[in-house]
Image 1 (cartoon, rainbow, N blue to C red):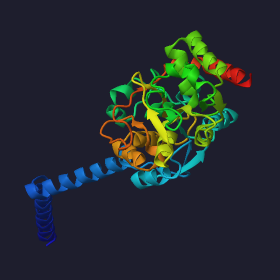
Image 2: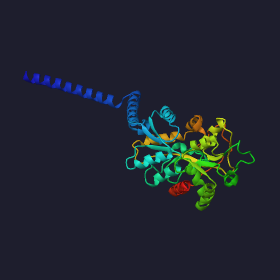
Image 3: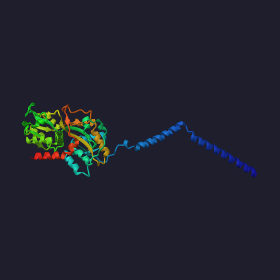
Image 4: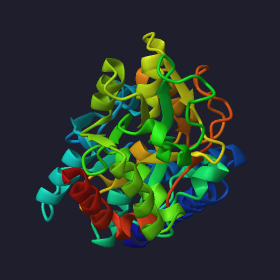
Length: 375
């Protein structure tokens, strides 16, 4: 009896072992021979997960967050540029307005602890000098710089510390038509030394008005420093009147205090539009140009947004909007595919002093003018 029971136990055990073995084999087969559809689904799921994770880690696909407004020091377009940039990018801009001298004085006072991110003014030589002191981001190029005109490309310095956004005439020739006929009016800047204009010529102060220094620098560069001083000394000897800024030159022209001037073009066209008896002359050799440039502080904490702002200024659509804004839109755009104001001479030619010459000799030229004006 004991032998029979033992045999029964052994048989049951053998059956259970066999069943377990078959079960294990079935499970293994199911794990290694899954259907192609199931395999493809799992692979796609895995790839999607990896792609999603990679996308989340790609910074270029994420918009740079902004915790405070981008601070821009400028002297024009303050009424429109913040809203334009906000609409285009979603970023906020805080503008600080001042003329050229005021802006550069503010930057000098903040040296070591700048409160600005971008400077955008028509003081190309002053801005270039900042790069020589290590105060600007250099050796970078915005994407839209590819659209610069041939003339504007020549204005980008070798160290790429700034980019031109527009060029306007620092001084076109203007004269009152009730004082001089077309035959008697000046045709060139050299004509201003004619004795018939004695005591009747005016201009803005190169040491105060941002556009006036490029005007003076152009003559000092094109005629040579000595030749430029000879030219202006003759004008001073004949009673050249120097006013702080162009609006004061306008007032002097309107009142008849002067009859001829080297006047910034926006002011000139505004006078004509207001009905003043004024003739604007663009000399064939070109009118001295004042270049508005945009540069980034080397200490900005918003480098990407600052670069986006400069790139935005070089967009043809942006420059077209600025041309269309009204009084401030009299300029030559720095990029292609922008239509000029209809009133502006389509053949107007601009001439600009070399950036290094203008920067290196700025203190001497301004000091010389101040001394001559004081005599």
